[in-house]
Length: 527
Image (tube, rainbow, N blue to C red; front, side, top):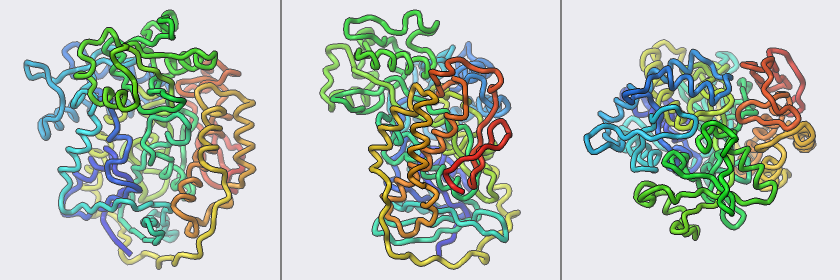
């Protein structure tokens, strides 16, 4: 048994910002399934959005966020986070001086899709995530313990106290360990790896969402998956992300013969909201036409985008030709574990922050560069709340159950996860329909996922696959219920937004409850 004040699962920007701001008289332990830097946050090429320009204002940032989110956002939460954004950037600038500056010493501001002003701060051009995570790691103090290659797979609940008190985890050799904390924080990221085309780190497989669901927490808005328009596409595979900042600097999406594809589609053309651009590219590729990012208008491309240049050159793309082959791929989950602004879930003692959480900030489609912002905000806000309220908790130090001994390992009979990824891309991807969704839903139900509840006896690889399948069902079922198109959820059989669905939320909860518009419907995942 291992006991800490704060137990954090995950090592992205939200997790590390929380850890670095917790009072040093408290013990913090971070568990991460891989290495500390193997996260979406570390890979983030884009920057952090904040209304700090002379002609900008949080009210403009607010309007852009709601427009991109197709007004499914929680407006109170949007205002709170965006009003705080300039201060968050100011604090980091003073602490670490990590952001790019103009020649006169001001922060260099970039433009990205669906933003009405230049408000994106970057670090190292297109290495914002890397530099931010490196900075936070350098600031980890002696009260923080890091456990790498430790796969958390089950939340431990104390039924008498009716609260979460820890997690069970497996080491690389399969040893089961029990970790306990006064506060348990899920910061495990989203679920991008459920799709065959994805920009995400290989570790982002929906673990925290599935764990929270199995423990009885409410899961919200899972139908809203953002597909980034421009993933490098080579030899039939996606090879990495081509940041939206490239289009912000003047790159244009074209067909093989040079025809711009966004002309007449949206007033903002290539900088339209991501779901619009992704669906447009998808329409071309479905007809057998390749799409390219024409970068010929960008001066000093290699100096401006060193990380993207390295990805392209590594994969044999000749940038002198001025074109990068691209396709859309899964990039961000707007849904997740339902939380309030602080990160509190529907289970006492359990918190969720970052992409694993659903606060209502992003609505139906996240505005570019609002994700690192949300992680920084939630890390700071939860640290303030814990530092203030720690002494008021009930305490679990003398109330922990005895560890469960591992049992003989058994093998999952689920299909290979590559099958799942390909089916999710085809059935629950950029364009959906009732027929495709019902096909996928029926296929997942026939796998009897409700049988995978006791997980101790499965290998890490099998548990990871089980979590992917459970999360896939939550996405599929939510997409089937929402009979409209909104943001990252597009249905060809319901191609328009329906005002009756505006701000209506689909919430999944274990034991067969799917609350649609605050009504109950049945699901066959877990009975």
